[in-house]
Image (cartoon, rainbow, N blue to C red; front, side, top):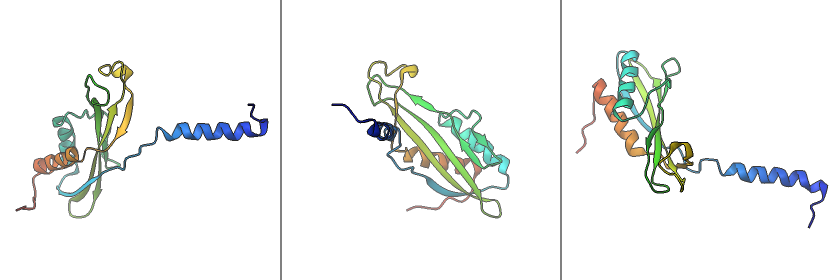
Amino acid sequence: MRVPRSMAAPLLVLCALFGACESVNRYPEVWEVDEIATDSQRVLWEVTAMSFQKHGFPTGTGLDPSSMVAVSGWRYDLAPFRGKGFRERAHVTYELLEDGRYNVHLRVQHENNMDMVRPLDLSYADWKPAPDNGVEAKLLILRIKSWIGGDFPMQG
């Protein structure tokens, strides 16, 4: 069966759209939100970088104090089975409130390696989005707060 020329262009556009849908992240971003108090923005950024390093996230050039955004490099954990290896990176955004208090929004993005043939070789990795790691995000916020010091709500 042949496709008429008048239908070829719309069919080509539809095929391209369906192919593009595969790369869209189907999982919502999960941001942990908390408040931090510090007298120095420089201390805040040093503690953020140290927290990334302590949790195995490379810092690289993703820390931008002027825009109050920090994005770590990817942290890899490969496994010899399809879908078991993963990579993660942290996203932090600070918002100055008043009197040295900041709102911190932190997310740990998570992707699984779906390569079947060489799952331990990064050059062949096939990264697919997965749900964010909320537990790691909470731990990072707690580490930042503990190094800065400050008020921790008592839970009981």
